Image 1: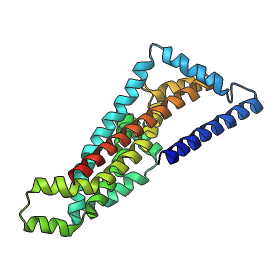
Image 2: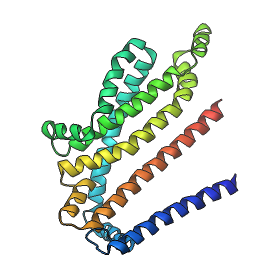
Image 3: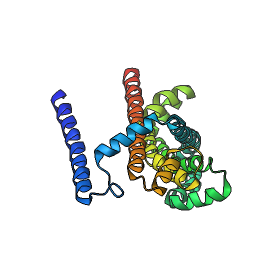
Length: 254
């Protein structure tokens, strides 16, 4: 097992080095910092961003919008997803709404949000609408995959509702929830930054990315992009960590 993990890390490192090599080669061929700066120049730009007094406010503003949008979408998804998973009629009612939200282009949602909301609220609204369908759909699928024979048996033996939820429903749907959250966060962060680029709140990664693009400071655009990728990666690690802890609890409980 350890040998396999070491090999996987080696392949991951090789992939990163390959991408950096392509980037370096491209920058040397183009030979213009206004089009594609070198990885070294971009790394220096990232270091400069860390020293900017506004850096933490920018990161915090984007994080707060993402967390707020995620929290609202998660609560709605749990409530509506569980209800739709249990009641077939409500599922039939909710599914076209989920398909419509999921199929609507993000740019259309942003343009409408710019009309309806304050600029700082636009990314939150976009986060809500992009994350909600992923989480809700997965919760519905998780509920519908619960073995109904176990539910019937539990009711026959007069098992309390809280134990049915805790010992049957939660262990069964937790993988679906984490899968939905992971997909939602991956897509949601991109949508939030796009929303910031177009709505231009005072602070936000998308705002500063757009400002850098306006003045053709390409290394700063790529630097902010790298930071956005890093934030998304850290949240993915956090989700996986919580998932491992949950699965450990579930295994111990069984």
